[in-house]
Length: 569
Ligand SMILES: NC(=O)C1=CN([C@@H]2O[C@H](COP(=O)(O)OP(=O)(O)OC[C@H]3O[C@@H](n4cnc5c(N)ncnc54)[C@H](OP(=O)(O)O)[C@@H]3O)[C@@H](O)[C@H]2O)C=CC1
Ligand SMILES: O=C1O[C@H](COP(=O)(O)O)[C@@H](O)[C@H](O)[C@H]1O
Image: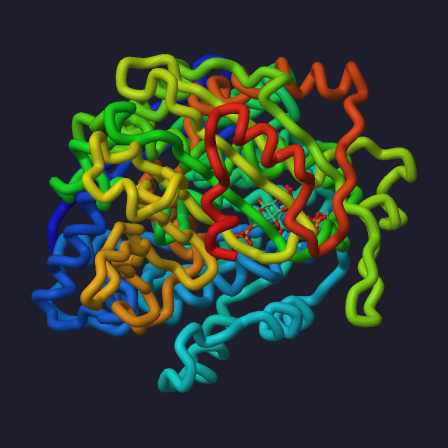
């Protein structure tokens, strides 16, 4: 068996300076690194070794490590020697049930979790281990129907799930959690991952208590933080400062689950590994870029949260802006997390802060259709009757750099619209001196190529081209070169939370938001958000299930743009 060097270092200056290294002290400040190495390398290595062992699970690229017992490699040894404890804080909540536990099960099913792991649910609600298991089991599914031994796998997974009830601000309760974690870890090297699936006002309490009482003594401790990361530049900065009293930046994994979506991951591949696209990726060829998000349901059940934030903070400042940054960044030096995140920061810093005159806001109102009544936003009892919170927004943003000067990046996001979807639409410039211009009548937009990256649902990429309609005449139409994922890749696509949880376990930070990225993102939106609130801008009402306010079209036409999704209707 190989031997390893353990490097122990203190990484939070304020606390480390005053604290001897004992278990009871702020242990997020004491981190042990075994094999300091790039985790992307780790996954590649895993894959390589798994291939050698002929055990690569073709469904998602994870090696089936739980079952393989021979030909151990260094990497493999490390996985077997250490234990992993994942604590879902807020385990009784919607996100935990809907996304986190199912994603953990999927990772377990696919052999992506280490041999020795346990999952703890933590919340105030009183539950037994068994009650937690029953609760979780209702939401676990085998991603691919009729997969073998799914029932057995579920039982095995549920046996690894435990529950601890406690207050979020109680160090004693976290100390008790620590005892339970240690029992499961059996003195082995322990890595601990906390997932904060709780409202943001208690993030810091939890981090404080967990850091003081329940961090790992000999392995790493990481914390996944859910959004919202503040409401504006100031509150976000304050949150970061408070978290950094207990954690280093390397321990904080700010999650934006859109970065874990397959088609968003593919954006860089599409651009940087296809010669047909990369040379076109600039103001020279691209007329505008559209980032569109829509949901065909309202804020049902989340009105209380939503009213504090609104659609701009809920979707645009994070999900859509992150996609924009990935889309528009310069080529990173490498695929390492820091290189990619540095390029994203650069492009965000090159952007012009959003102006009030470049935003339109809307709010859905009640509507009856087919004998069914759909509630308006303010019909939600948790939302104030006179709320001005936007449930829809459209915005025009600009990047002041040589590559993108003058190109409008249009965003549109809304709830309770006619359809659910998320897509990136790239509209190219017109062909200069197009010989076939007359075949399109006067509508030049019809002659524009458009690249559409459909993030969801029905993932796909298609390129709109001009094509001759077969026949003796010369008539042109627009046709799609279509890469439909369900036809090309019939296997089911992993949920974003699976990818991100796996990355957090592996220490891969590429898809998590660094604090300077977050600052830059808030700086772009904060002035306009404050102005919207101070001026009490009244949102344009739109019926539940409609296409949203007409103001979105005026905004687009101000920049000579037509929303591409209308053409698909
Ligand atoms: N749900 C979703 O689809 C999404 C959620 N998020 C974010 O993820 C986090 C969790 O979301 P979600 O599960 O919906 O949240 P919930 O409102 O369901 O809260 C999660 C748990 O936190 C505890 N809790 C709730 N409110 C309070 C409070 N005021 N004070 C103390 N504890 C409280 C409750 O557990 P108990 O009472 O048992 O302690 C609850 O079960 C939030 O930050 C949210 O913004 C992000 C993206 C999508
Ligand atoms: O972060 C959020 O995302 C969801 C939409 O996520 P999706 O993966 O289902 O597209 C949105 O409903 C929610 O309001 C927002 O907080």
